[in-house]
Image (cartoon, rainbow, N blue to C red; front, side):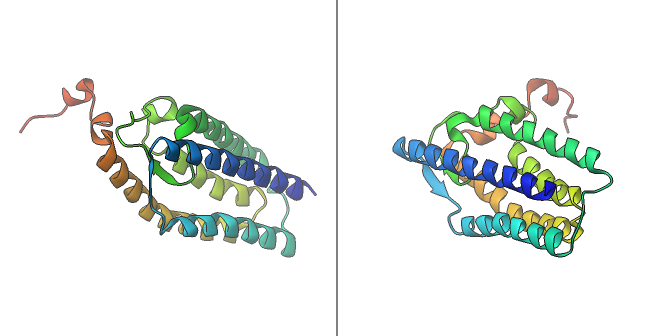
Length: 186
């Protein structure tokens, strides 16, 4: 029963995020945003949808239970959720599940983006590992970590090329003067 409540909450969260993404997509396209990565987007949707199918099959059919290490996994999951909210709040109307780039837009460098370029992908990776481990669904954790790595190997370069093409992305993430002074000149 606990598994189904947890699953219901996560799926509800994802559906609400898809509604936010659709609203942001309309807003961005009205402002002139250009979409990239359309060819791989269905694979992202498939991986994320099949993750839930695999999780349900492994937990329900194989009668998996809550992990004895559930406090650790639940804490990691909750930290990831805080990170997810931080990402959404930091990007605001720029957050999306698709790659939408508004030409000449300023690159977001606040929130977690002041520390890493792609915090949302880190959070998703953590979730795809931690959620199955919470219920001892080891095969789902392994398979979807691999599937996610493959799709991110396509997604991240596509996103970076799009940002470099239409914004000052490279300059926004250039080394700060304090980092440059520590580099030895040849």
